[in-house]
Image (tube, rainbow, N blue to C red; front, side, top):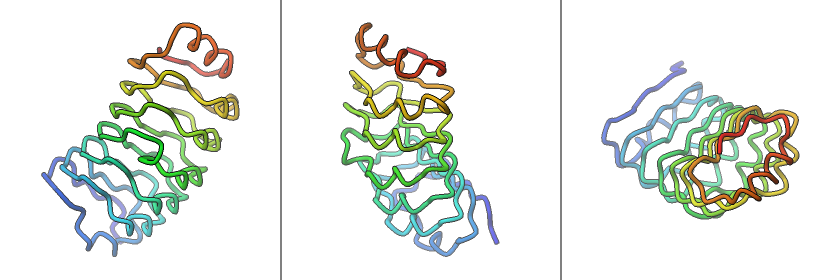
Length: 173
């Protein structure tokens, strides 16, 4: 019946397989470890509402995380995600997601499907290598409250375009 598990800063290099049995888990904090991958079975923890994988060494996350449809907060910041394939399209299924953190990675572009996360209220994209955001972000105009694309090489003209696309969002360039 465990609902909350905090394994932050435990020098883990892999996720203990026994965690796959914790099907009632709602919060899992695996931040600040040495994880280079996340097991597919993590997607079976369908009651998760909060997942923190910040500050690991992840170069990708599994497709199965798209099964975590109750997820409201996911932190993938501070890893080594660097391309669209690092963040699978299945994450577009996480329509209950309200807070997504992809900051402090090496992303050069943002997946178009992020625009499908229409309950998203906060999106951290700071400290990547982004030069633009996809036009699909117009779908977020009604719900996205805070956008952080700080410390990315986004031109002033592109910044103006992003502001026009998201007129009701507080944007921190």
